[in-house]
Image (cartoon, rainbow, N blue to C red):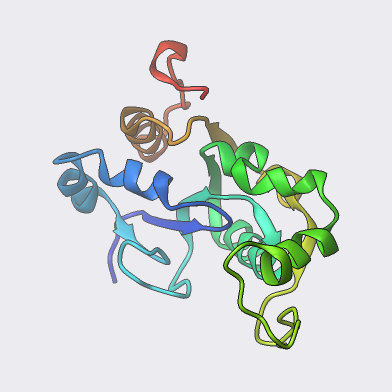
Amino acid sequence: MSAKPRIATVSLAGCFGCHMAILDIDERILRLADLVEFDRSPINDYKTFTGRCAVGLVEGGCCNEENVHVLEDFRRHCDVLISLGDCAINGGVPAMRNHVPLRECLEEAYLKSPGVYNPGGVIPNDPEIPLLLHRVYPCHEVVKIDYYIPGCPPPADAIWSAIVALLEGRPVELAYAGLKYD
């Protein structure tokens, strides 16, 4: 069994741009691989936790019941949980639907949008499809979040600085000038 600290990552209702920002740490990804072991993450395609994690990075907000369960699972398995990016922190682009009733969103997506071919006029309701929430929730409204790294996506250097600080037992200090708020 590895003595390396473990890191887990997940993308909820987001675009995977924050995971691309993780990969944008460039050659430092090799150093990170020396420092940690990746647990549940799309980076290694592990779908379940294999152990306790020192750090969990969460991209995206919660738009359906599956997102909520995954986020709660991350909180249970991770010592430190980081909201990564604007969708995790504020709901981001997916939260634009918060201003429209859910039924109206579904009708627009499956019945009324240009190019939709749905002769039965059925809105999908298979039990295998996670139920949509009435609005998109930022992560901190679902579980306790320890740190926030803003940006769309966050700068790779900010992600790297936060991870290294946590692994070295230092407080996370992100320089304002190094962050993006767009």
